[in-house]
Length: 297
Ligand SMILES: NC(=O)C1=CN([C@@H]2O[C@H](COP(=O)(O)OP(=O)(O)OC[C@H]3O[C@@H](n4cnc5c(N)ncnc54)[C@H](OP(=O)(O)O)[C@@H]3O)[C@@H](O)[C@H]2O)C=CC1
Ligand SMILES: Nc1nc(=O)c2c([nH]1)NC[C@@H]1CN(c3ccc(C(=O)N[C@@H](CCC(=O)O)C(=O)O)cc3)C=[N+]21
Ligand SMILES: [Mg+2]
Image (cartoon, rainbow, N blue to C red; front, side, top):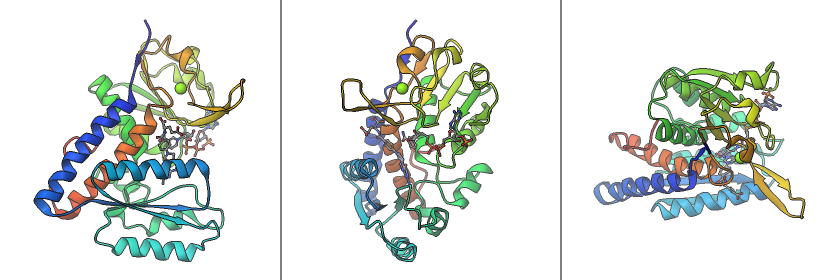
């Protein structure tokens, strides 16, 4: 039995339609247009691609999009000053500082400067703490997108064994928190994990967020497991040029898994859809409105 392909691109389009409907309501009934500001420091071709597609998706959803492209030599003080301005700007409901930032800037300090209510990435320590204690937070976009796909595919996740490979603050750890909140039994694996294949083989749900092309193979997968591939790796093609692959050896794992996300067209498009969703959520919370349906964890 070949695995079900979880079409992240199609699901993201549905989430973006929901976002658009909420935006229309906010504009028509409350006279408020949600606004997202994306800040990019320095030149990184991959980051520029994401920032451009975020801007396009934001406008398509009927929201205000602002992009700040700063020189690689921008000082930490100047970046903090810009964040201060965006924090005070009434037309901006979401602020995202694209990571990584250049080495002379302290990323933790920058993230701490963002108003937690506008922290649509969910990276501010207040949001991290709120999520970790089961309170209403802004939830990081990539893990939120993964959770939405898992719920859509599996229904209730309660009691399932989940293994998250990777313990970063932006993917692995918040993913584990969300799975725990949905009552999975959660294991977080990383580079020091002993017998990683054996650990992963226990999982009903595998989330791979490592950054190593095609690392996860079919021998690691319990038959029927659901596999979410967060990895985005650009590799050289034998015939020249490059292509994107995930952390999962897709062709191989698809023979054993119950369901699997492709790369591209899986987690990536859902991340962008959830960024828009978080911006609408931030706007609704600011106005004291009910949580927008279908857009939150
Ligand atoms: N689709 C999307 O929207 C997004 C995709 N990504 C992609 O997801 C991937 C992970 O991103 P991110 O979390 O930021 O990466 P990080 O580099 O911050 O974290 C990688 C994690 O993988 C672990 N790891 C590394 N090597 C191994 C190994 N051999 N076995 C087991 N674990 C290992 C590391 O362990 P340790 O902590 O021990 O070093 C670390 O915890 C990347 O490919 C990135 O491009 C990221 C964000 C969004
Ligand atoms: N503050 C911050 N927030 C982030 O959310 C953030 C970040 N910094 N830094 C970089 C990572 C990476 N990331 C991606 C978003 C979309 C795709 C995406 O849409 N990918 C397409 C393919 C795009 C392509 O072809 O290059 C897909 O998978 O189908 C990928 C990766 C968000 N990140
Ligand atoms: Mg793959």
